[in-house]
Length: 150
Length: 253
Image (cartoon, rainbow over the protein chains, first blue to last red):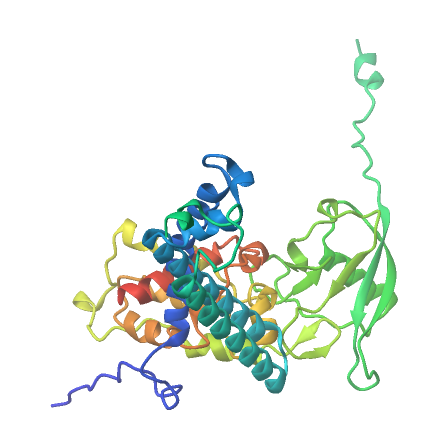
């Protein structure tokens, strides 16, 4: 009696260099998910900064300092910073993959993107969490109103 | 009374005017030329003539060395995909009346595949990725009574759009990702995988989803819709690719 043995589910080729995590797939999913979240975060950010209350004329050091002492806005800004920079960096990476023809230029550009994304994320996160809203010796009319009570 | 028939003039159909069209063709003869170059031809054509007719007139009446592929000349064999005024079209389905004949018409070979001569490219890399998605029915069960495998109308309609592909390569060679990354499977291969992934009679959708869940698979698609615009059969190529992406994320067709 003959029996047939099924062909393996995975193809014979292309299997050697396949890593366990499919970065292209997760990169693609990340772009979709972060894109949707960023629409809410960025338009919320613009609405609060530019339209509510006095609008754009309210923007000054004191306004930003006031926002950055509020834990809600700190978390909002940090999430926005990380999502937007990784989203943009990944988008630039795909552009480089598409349009940089030589292996060397591709490598240089991708390292440059990675370095700028990492340093901007580090700097931004540092600013949000270590920000001093009432610098010593600053004129009272330039800093937030709550600085007087400190 | 007998004059009545004599007075009637014979009905002469309105004469359709022909006009002169300038075609600028990108020529390349690998035995002589270092680089491709543009050459222009003036052809007398009717509004109902196609770009293929213009190429025929050039080849038959002006320059017999002009080289291009065509077989059926009726939009089914998929041999004569070429870049006409910067857009991938079948020469046999592009009518003069749909083009602006006051300006010259630019005709060149499709991009992203190795140019062999004039309007002919090497289609082998294109067919290689087509073969790699295993575009054939795979089923380990013998059909009932050795006859056909029954399918409902809805099951057939699920993949109807992608059955229309004629493998002309207009979509794949219009894809900006494919232009720079020859490893990318390309829209046509994904369309033909889609045709079997969503076929209820086929059992190996998971194999094809594995193949396309590759670094060079569906995730390379940027949804630029060039392929949908280029398809001479009107297949919603970008949508088919998106459906394959969804199927990979769900893990099944």
